[in-house]
View 1 (cartoon, rainbow, N blue to C red):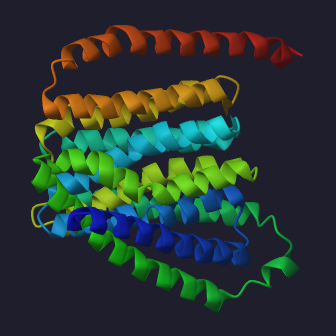
View 2 (view 1 turned 45 degrees about the vertical axis):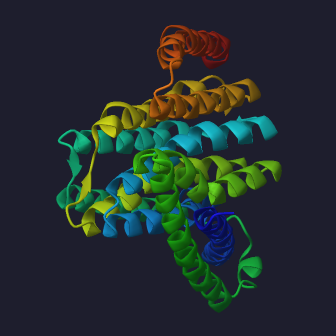
Length: 355
């Protein structure tokens, strides 16, 4: 294998291993403090699994690869919703609680719209990045306060069995492994992009985004399999919020000139990220769950998005026909299906509400 491929594979292995140590230590520390599972999913697990995105985007910004930093954030958010939630729903339908629907998903939509608005002038400036980081701190403080009010779900005697020192050691080692893995992944991805003549934005939207989202994949699928579906959904929603506020915010703050936003990202990829976030709301309103067929729909659209990137990059002759099919066929059909589902759900719940 060529060296760039070996670097990418080795970096991915280190990222997954480091994220596992980080999540294990963070989860145990959260258990020791008595924080509920939903808050753990939205903060500790989501932030922990998003650490690869932070490290990769920060190093890309410092190394003068802003397209890679931006593509990592946008691509990861699209990947998280369409592929991770889609695959998790195929494992088992995901029952969604009211706080997720009416509080967390709107926050995810709001942060996506904010990122789009800040990018309209062609750059996420250092001031924009500072604003995003301040909003991250406020959101995190709010979640911790809400979690402490609710109180831990584990008995006090079980929490005392968890070692704080051991948890902190696991977190520290995990972070160190993540930094090293991010370095390999970044070097290999940039070398591969240059060798194949592919833009760094496309590499960031696909290879790097999928690679740095592997911890989210493993965590959400395992949580769904074990019945911890609040953690699975909270992990995805929290990660997307964290990606915009922390990953993009920090990259803009430490970048020499913030994070420049290219025309393709502004006109297509960021709007797709916003559309994917908005699409979650009507799906979650149809019975407060993500059914298996809706999970399959998410996976279909991720495949279509990836295929579009490939056709666009290679200037393939099939691109106009594919775009027309998606624009005038698949998207309207999906919108009508979701609308019918929402109407049916409202009719089904109306008698129960009147009793």
